[in-house]
Length: 101
Image 1 (tube, helix red, strand yellow):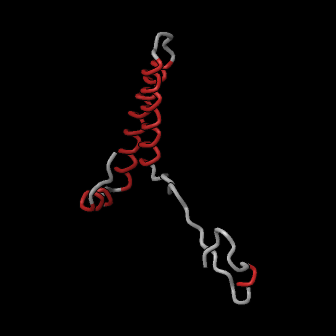
Image 2 (cartoon, helix red, strand yellow):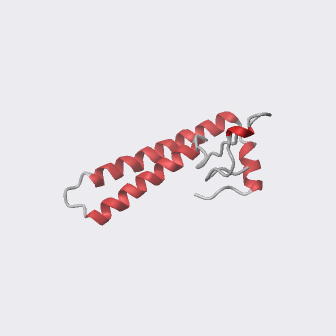
Image 3 (tube, rainbow, N blue to C red):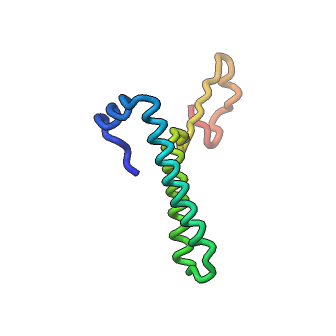
C-alpha cells in the first residue's frame, strides 16, 4: 500500500470520526474475510510449498495493512543519543574503539 499524497491525506483528515470508524470496520471485515480464506487454503493438504509461501506472504501483507489501518505502525528503527554531562568525558577514555566524540 502506498502512502497517500498530501492532498489525499488532508481529505482523509476531513472525514468525520464516525464515518472514519465505519470505514475502518468495513476494511477490518474485508481483512478478516480474506484471512479466513487464506486459512482455508493453508489447511489444504495438497498445497505446494510455493503456494504456501505465497499465502503466508498474503497473510503478512494483510496484517501490515491492518496495523496501518489503525495507525499502529511502529518506526522500523529508533536512534538513542545520550549526551554526557560536564566532567564525564574522562569516562570515555582516549581512543576507545567504536566510540566517537
